[in-house]
Image (cartoon, rainbow, N blue to C red; front, side, top):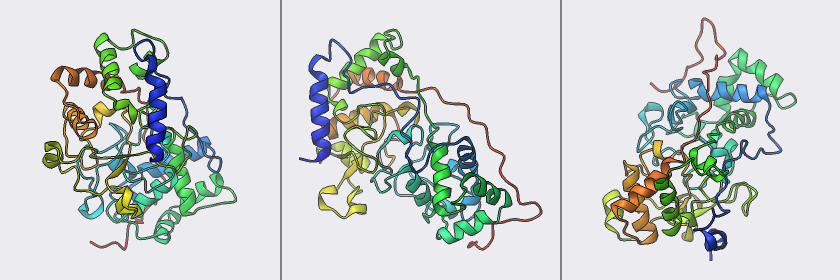
Length: 353
């Protein structure tokens, strides 16, 4: 049996024994701060530097795309597209995952191909379909040509200086501040029974009864966060579709992508996917790895049938959707940073027109 299955089954069976009487312990409020790696401690200066880099389109080969282009922090932390559009109009294969609360995951990307936020950030800067920097050398040349960045890296990373590693560390440090806590569901978990309505509570119970909670549990409703059963870099995956051959699978092309196998080349990883967070799910359409499903109620129907072989009534779907809407948290105020300038010159040169 897979590690994922062992973890989810054990946790779920322990939790649901008295589900009607109390909230299962497998649901916990979002902590104010995510796990911080020992090799990249948070500092205000590092976070501010990472924020500048996150919003700076000069990290892309064309000078047109920043991290925020696909992970729009003025909205749901993604782009609202079925396929993200990178430099030169190149399209990515899979829909953009939100960066809000991403620091509570143990693995990154739909296929788990990045083990840390640092690796995820650098991976996308160097991806030809995203930000398009051909290699770390080109990235360092670009950033080193901007006096303000060169001075900041010397100060913030004293002894390390400017490198692809420290660029990724700075961006990841900022991303670890992207936390949307105090959702109605968080307040409910903390004991405020009036934080969510009777219908939303009924939807929560249905969410458990249907067994959505066998995968979507713990603080990010995406399985264990680092330190609980899994360490950073260890994945929590699910087979999707779990019940093949449904009309939904055909209609939305859900099995056309072979999932994690495309990265790992391990046969048992075929159509295995990292379990995504359900936090802020009501504002992050479209849904699934291919972005084929446009509405949340349809996504609930698809999941019930393809994963659990259940047909839900409109009333049941409505209750579950009502619960899912309680997972939208409070978004911190983010002011746009002032980026270091290059007076009277441009650093965007040498890319194909």
